[in-house]
Image (cartoon, rainbow, N blue to C red; front, side, top):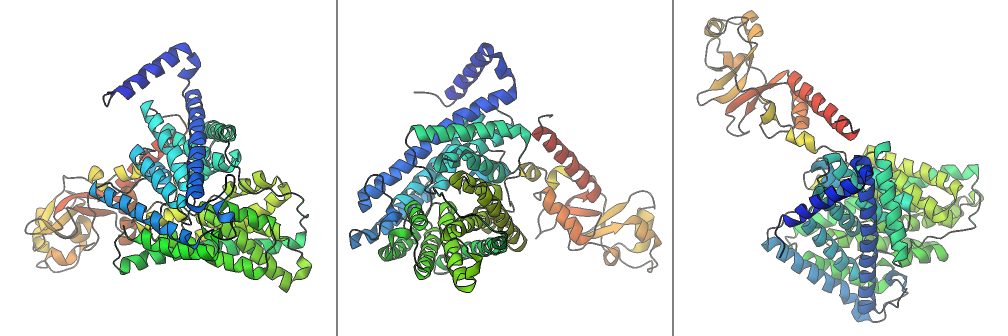
Length: 593
């Protein structure tokens, strides 16, 4: 049996052999590109395998024929099948009970890993999320597999990067490669996967990371094709030419997609909070949610699972406006209930399906209100699909390239990009989060993207504060203070009560020129009574505290309740350290550090 350190030993030996055999590997960039290719192949294999296992579950539980899709069925073969999502909820609940007993922490996804932990991800987290996602989608919950795909691709990429002891930024890049490969394999769209990695997981686009990310995306897409991966079900041809008069309505559709995405995210949160208010244990929520999803599935199976088959039906058939609107409401309810009740998965594909339905509904309304505009339902579906997905998932270029690689229509892609930008602007200015970062916000995290801010958390007040501070009893009179602290002996003194409890900051020059009576206690002359720092504060939070207080220096206390003085920090030193660390991070990113 292998010891814990033997895989790392073998990895170091393998790396040494490769470097001796291939001198080109001494160039770090080439090594990262080669590892990205390996990551892409692994992602392509795993995405195909996960998709096939879920399809097999649909065949076993719902009687879906080989090559068919659950959401493409016109009705369930047997009403008893409506209980399948609830059974999946029971299994998921049991997994939550097991995880709770084992005291597992909340799993870290690729965006959080790259933002806070330098790309470090746990394989345990990876396997947990992948298994729970397959159970959720396989038993019919209205969630997509994309969260599981990206978790698997990025998790294995992170482990591979750490085995080869890559630098922090290279680890983050390889995590982005894993996510890019997963999305590229899932949609047979290398550019879409690559820009998913750039925009959402790495958080930046630069020349240095183009080669590894594109390599991973292309390798994953080709691997998925070799192993029989099912392409994205959006093959459109013969679309009508767009006219100038149609651009304004499509921009309006982009805004509607952004507004709808905000409403969807709030709806999911409302359902989650509803379960909390009802004091329903987390392990029971998926079962209850599964009951409701199953009932909705009795109305139409289009609401079940991710919705690949249903999306194909929407593009291949022209349904009346009332039918499109009703399916939109049902799918929205099923997805919100699934996620709000605790099923594992994401809104990536659900947002594409809901957006296509929104676009078709928009075209139907425009046909009634302004028939002369001539809005084509298929074009409107593509624009609506990408606009709503941009609001939920983020990444306007990611969704634009998805439209381009699916339709191969450059003119349509221009309209899609314009509408996506409108959606992104609306969401950013009025809401400020994508679905992933919104869920971080609900957990108390402050990150809004995958930008590397982990170093900011290590730059704490405790590491920057001065401990050699002068304190004085707050009951000291002004005359005694001037005698004890002559002008020029110090810039500032901390006033404290017995026990070193913080009272305020005394600016020495100001107290020596203050016209107050000599017997005035310095307590009444102290500043910033309520503005203090604690050692655990990071540089960003401390800077915000300085700005709110309008102070140039603040005391550092042990905690907010006891307020025992530990030290002092000046705003100038804080900003200088921040600038130094930021400059270092930029040099590392550029490969100069």
